[in-house]
Amino acid sequence: VAEEAWSWQKDRDAFLFTPTEQSPSIRTDVCIDWDPLKMNSAISYLCRHMQFSCCASLRSVFGNENLLPRERPQFAFYDKKKNFYVRHVDNPRCIGGDDNLRKITMVYYPNPGLWRSSDGGNLRLHLNTEIDIEPAYNRLVVFFSDVVEHEVLPSNRERLALTVWLSDVKS
Image 1 (cartoon, helix red, strand yellow):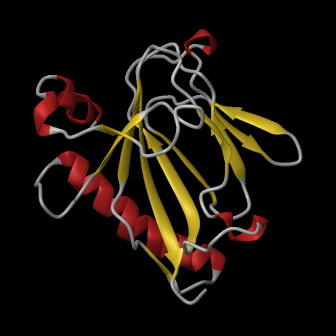
Image 2 (spheres, helix red, strand yellow; image 1 turned 90 degrees about the horizontal axis):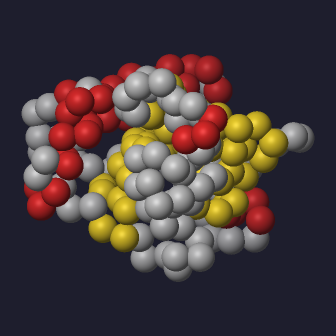
């Protein structure tokens, strides 16, 4: 999966990574929304697995049968130019924003090789204390979309992240 995830570099036109619509003072990565039903590939299989198998497990863990994958998975690419994403929540409903129904965020990292602290690009979760998580190969991070503030620290190495959101359709 990691090799395939990085294959977009060979043919950038086939993968329509585009800058986000947010200000460069907020985030500087480029993204693509992935349709896992349109392509028969390891990446599509991984997306479907995260959307459905992981979703079923999390429904059981949280006792919430209303969790569903409502949006397309998103790949975010950070290059070596100290790309970042400032502190935020994926669903701002708990801080007075509009409810986008996101309840669970799952982030998977297909980044090859050993990740060193000097590479930067950590996911920082703001809980009772700050927790930095390296975007190491084959790592999956799961957190509540509406209450866990998080950010991506400046990256000194190319970095990919696949994000899948599960929504609470009864919210």
